[in-house]
Image (cartoon, rainbow, N blue to C red; front, side, top):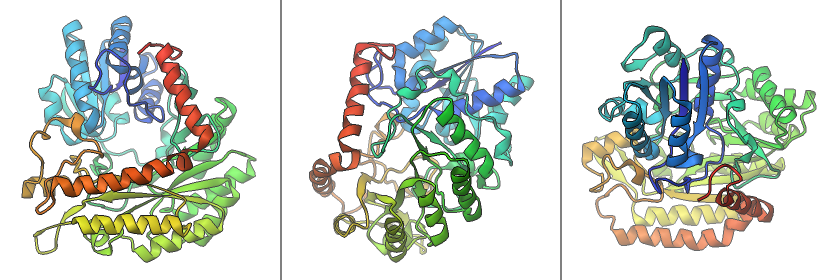
Length: 460
């Protein structure tokens, strides 16, 4: 039995490599591959990162491998690419069993079946894929969460060629870098967050043991020679004792690589931050979202602006850099059931607030996006209830990017949106090199050039 696991390509520029260079390998399907390989050892597995290879090369790999089953994982913005690829696959081999997975399959399983998939996986894929194999299931398939994340083997990175080719995020000290996930899910419920995969079952938040996480980091450094690690868990500062243990084990094992992670500024934990600094953590990304407390309360961010500054200052005092994420034009349903949303002035307040934090060195870097109501989020439900989606966006998922204005908020004109975009672009031009650094900028240029001349397998 052969199965081809594919991370969906984007729908743009069909026939060529994607213009969206992914920062990291697709851990989702690599986890599925490793779990499948452990539980059904006689299956032959191939993995293709379509987000890197693009539609044509991905389809060519499918034809060459000629699998019995194909699984395509996609987020909502990449789902059109998944549907387009599926159409070509079914034309080439109608009898192939096609499984959809990923966030979009979880929030829109019926659409995935309507587009031609035989199976739509809702939730996590590891146990579901094994169940599909053993019971020959079709339709919508959902299994319970794996309670112990240590039971899942490390992602099958050996199935991705050129694993060190991924450029990583802009902020980094050393290359190549790669990503790990020390937790799954989130105990909070921010209204804009599309994290539905982990809300199908309880518990919503799970964590790997410190030893398991550090084992993986040690393997990545020794086997693959990665020089920097990014723990892309939603919040490193939720299970404080386990996170402190991770830091201590990194030091005890003598793992000397810089690393970074993400924080939620809901509380100040001095001991954790001190241990992170000792263990080599050099940067933390914090989701601040808005400079208006009214907005933070409305979107259920569960943080205060006062705590944001306290946490960031403590990080800086311990030599850890900070990067703030911000969003414009939030919307939410008030306690009275009425629609609430940000105005142009609210957005200008956020921009002014973020620039003050940068000026006062509370933040080192920052980035900004327009709020997008992704399916599966509470904001999505609010948009449906109050008819907030712009015409032409429903179902045209490749337009659902955070730089597109998808909501039509009462009293907010296109000129208001352009005003914020213009202000941000001015600031972005001034800060890009500061965020990336000269070395990182050259690293990205190399990756673009390498793909153009075919070093990674395809000319553009």
